[in-house]
Every structure is written in C-alpha cells, then in structure tokens.
Image 1 (cartoon, one colour):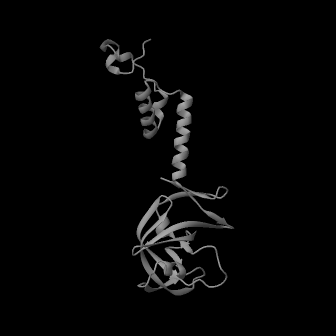
Image 2 (tube, helix red, strand yellow):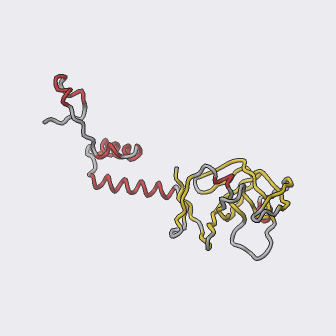
Image 3 (tube, one colour):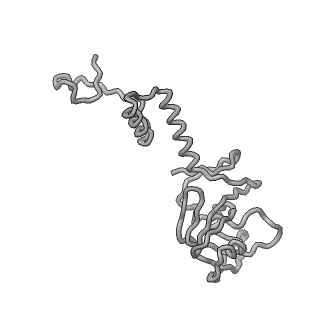
Length: 193
C-alpha cells in the first residue's frame, strides 16, 4: 500500500485501485483550514489533532461571541440594547423584544434625544384592540448586535404610569428575517446566520 498526497503521482495502471482518505483538516470550515495551511507553510509541520481541535474550539468561541448580544431578563421580558440613528443623531435605548409588535415603538423621551420633530400622525392598534393616536417616523438605521437595518418605521408613544427599565418595543420590522435564540440563563441573544 502506498500513500500519496497528489493523484498525479499515481501511475496510470493503478488509477482504478485508488482509495481516498480524508485528513482531519479536510472537514474543517474554510477559515480554520486556511489557518491550518498557513501554519503548515510557516513551520513546515502541521499541528497535531489536539491542537487543531483546540484551535477550532477557540475560533468557534470567538464566532459565537461576535454573534451574541448581552440582554437583560426582567421577569418574562427580554430587554435588548439598541442603537438608533435619525438625521445624523445617534441614541442608545433598551427595548423589549416583542414579536407581537409589527413595528418598533419608542417612548417619547427617546424621540426627544434623537431630536425628532417631523413625525407624522398615525393610529395604532394596541393589545386588547384599542386604537391610539401616535406619531410615526422613519429612522435612518437600527443596530442590534451584529445586525443593522436601515429605513425602519417607528411609532412614538407617550409612556404613562410608573417608571420602567426600558424605552419601547423592538418589533417585527427589525426582527423579521433574523434567526436567533435567547439563552435566559446566560442572558444573551445568540444570532444564527
């Protein structure tokens, strides 16, 4: 039995007897395979399987960290840190992740921080079927973790009652099309690509 790393090294009369075996690195994702090959070129040796496993685990951990957002769990509410942009002004807000809200809803104090002055009047139907009159504006962008969406509408509502630790709702016009899971124990959103 003879092993070769290039099929051109096999004499033509033996081509019908070839068996292919994959190396450990062959099953790695492309970015990890590139790291493996670069190390091989630099040092002339390939890392051990244990080193490959450790490197793969570190790369996977980094990738996960980049694709997660720290959140605050308040009872059954998931409070998400959001960056909002409007007419060159940027503001941070904590919004409740709300898959029942069709669009983003912001408390008036966030609109004031963004210096929103040209909102249009609209009517919104809220939980319970009640209709309220509110303002609607088109935001320049909304950022959450690794995701940015441009030109999203947001309703501006006047919060009444006791103080709350959030500034509105993160609705489906941002969440639509994104895949994510919430780890309630670690208090993170893991974004899946």
